[in-house]
Amino acid sequence: MTMIRTTLATISALLALALPAAAADDFIAAPTLRASVSVTSDVVRVGDLIDNAGSAALIPVYRSPDLGTTGTLAVAQVLSVLRAKQVIGVMTGDIKEVQVTRLARTLVSKDLEAAVASTLERRFGLGDAANITVTFDRGISDMRLDASNTGALQPVSTRYDARSGRFDVAFEINNDNNPAPTKLRFTGTAIETVEVAVLTRDIDRTELLKSSDVSLERRPKAEVTGEPASRDRTVGMQLRRPMRAGMPIRVADIVKPDFVVRDQTVTIIYQVPGLYLTTRGKAIESGAEGDTVSVLNPQSKRTLTGVVTGRGQVTVQGASQSAPMAPAVEQTSSLKRDDVPAAAALAQSLIQAPASPAQIAQAQIPQVRVSQAPAKSE
Image 1 (spheres, rainbow, N blue to C red):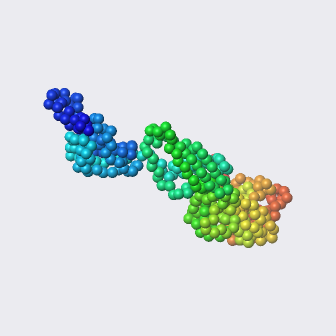
Image 2: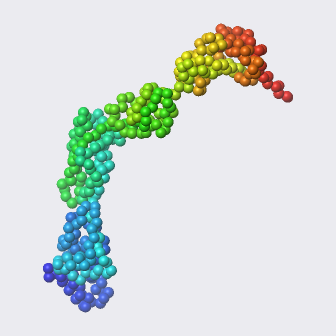
Image 3: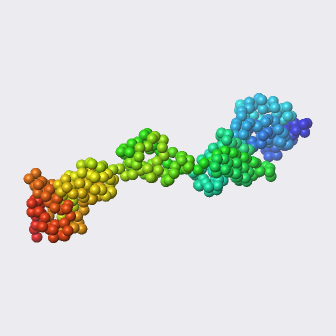
């Protein structure tokens, strides 16, 4: 102890008297207290607290704070402890307190969950790690290890029960201070999940799904039989059956909205090149846009087949049966009141699907007042 006292105080004073000031500064400097200290071990030593500690540097003086935390020491208290260790002559300057931080390696719970999921990925019948939800037996918050644990988490033992979802995974982490790795073990449940659209309220079959009716949730894959529907895919669609709030939606549960409903009065459009006629009819079956449905023409009392092209609108195409029309004839469905009977008769004869273009050409086209395009002047 006497040698330590001499090293830090007496020898410094003697050298200062024997040598010029500049030469003394070159050979030895006064011990100086630090305002902020970072340590990696579980004890704070003299060399951690002061600069130029000399042979006293390895003397332990305090127990370190907990891993990843910072403690504060009053300067007077530090000097008292140093004197008890025969360390004197420490320069403090204007420092009032010393902050001591225990360095640590922090493993956040999300990283631990990801490590377990990656270990189980594509094993035991599970899929991608991103779709595996991990729950630990004991709620694990952030885990702090000594800063010397610099290695990666390496799985060394893995057990999994596919029926219960139980896992038991052991990891090892290599460190700088000890040839023996740090061992970690986790147990809990791991379940493969899928992202699926879920109803936020009870929905009837006739309702269109709005954005507010659907939310995204992760559900166990076993709960969703079939292909899960995405949120974007469900908005604007209809359900095949009424469903309650909280139920996951599968692709098989949704259909395009019905633009035509059975027994609804619809507009029947008959199109041939150069001619566009409309009449009212009755839907015999429901259908979404693009579906082929049957409608009843009240004029001809015939059942027609057409494609749903809009809300309450069915188009009957007659291009394959039509006769060529003069290019000067303007397509129109706007008829005067006096022309309605004639148009109805024309629609009836056309919709009855004549057997040949000649029969269409012989239909009552002169009774429909169509506009003749004016001739262009040369």
